[in-house]
Image: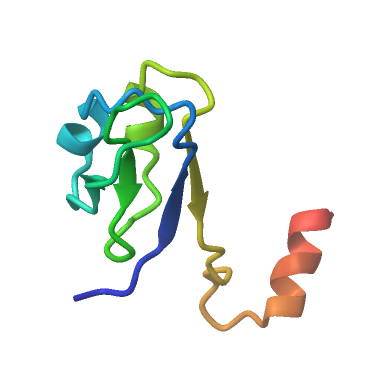
Amino acid sequence: MAPARGYVEFSSAECKGCGVCIDACPPKCLELDPELNQYGVHPARYKGESCTGCGICFYVCPEPGAITVYRAATPPKAAGVTATEANHAATV
């Protein structure tokens, strides 16, 4: 299994537990929490592995502010070019 390229944080106070994000997640790395939140619903949660950082869960969520997606930084791709040269070329 490939390492996670991102991770997801949920606000249990904002999540309605509708499950739309769980159904939409391509790597299926989300689930409903077995514990109830303060509103008596099972909020969604990140399983802790397999997130690609695609953000689909964020876009399908009907509740603004319930989901935050973080994507891991990737090193610059440049064949035969050092990181310093790649950064310099991007600032010119």
